[in-house]
Amino acid sequence: MQAYSPYPRAKWVHRWKETKGRDLSSQINGIVQELERTVVQIARLVEEGERQIELERQEWEVQSEKWRREEDERRAAKALKESRDEILRIIDIWDKAKRIEQFIADIERRAADLPDEDRFSILERLKLARELFGSVDTLERFMTWRSPEEHSP
Image (cartoon, rainbow, N blue to C red; front, side, top):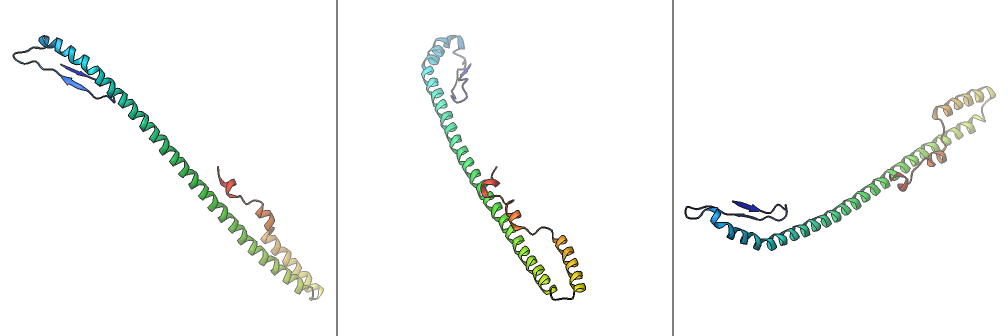
């Protein structure tokens, strides 16, 4: 015969065997006494199991909080990098825009000294070049930039 604790965190098992000289029916009083004595032991095992569960829950909460903080830090670093990369792209665009503006201004200045027919032809071509480049308004592009806080979800 076997008795055991049904509680998952309270491991306890005891076995009684029949022998040639002793069958289980003759051991009933001893079995009952043994079971009564082990009640306190099993209760302590249950309490210890519950304490262990609570400790594991607390450890899980600490670990979960650590993971959450690490994820927040990772997101913040990613947002900072994305924001920085974005503003560097805008600066590159600004640099190109400044060069385009200088290029166009130089052509306009030099075209002013040309005869009317040549100046008109150059200014028409310059108009086509402007259309090809589109807007070079860096302020407009800067307004689309997102700060690190705006990158964060």
